[in-house]
Amino acid sequence: VPNFQRGQRHRASEGLMLAGGKGINVARALKRLDVPVVATGLAGGGTGTQIVEALTAEAILNDFVRIQDESRTSTVVADPAGGAFTEIYEWGPHVDEEELAILLDKLRYLSRGADFVVFSGSLPRGVDEGFYAEAIRDLNRRGVPSVLDAEGPPLRLGTEAEPFLVSPNQREAESL
Image 1 (cartoon, rainbow, N blue to C red):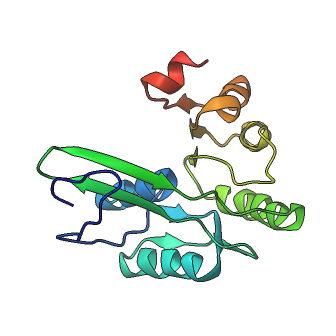
Image 2 (cartoon, helix red, strand yellow):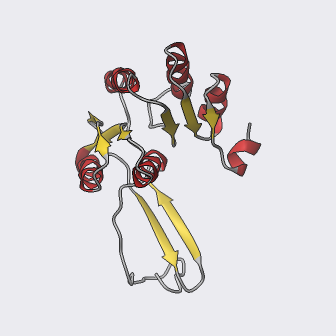
Image 3 (cartoon, rainbow, N blue to C red):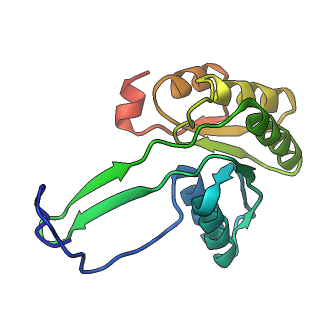
């Protein structure tokens, strides 16, 4: 949106729908580097279906747990004239214990053939802040290295679980 101004009506000069998020972006980058990758996580509602279809169209193997609640969407308004962008994030879906247990089982299964498992992004509502830490400890017991890219308490707790690699940005690192 050229010359974007808050509180004004604008017409976008261009629009783009793209499956995204830290984990999906990691999978996309690995695919482009010809590194075998399977994207997994939680996908709900029509948005979740769009995510799965987009990854499949990009030939990125994926195996998501379908959840009851709708996956979140995010909107980025980019102003090419000023070089600024505004990000608007919906609250993520609520995930119940059964859905999370299915995801953990899937992670255990998929990790048997993995060189690494990457945990990234914010946790959905209803998921304990120690989720990444619990999963990392489980992988450590089974000899599977993990990578963590998160923020706040999930980053702090996950780091305490001793992942192979932690990938915070400067703001996230300073919060530790």
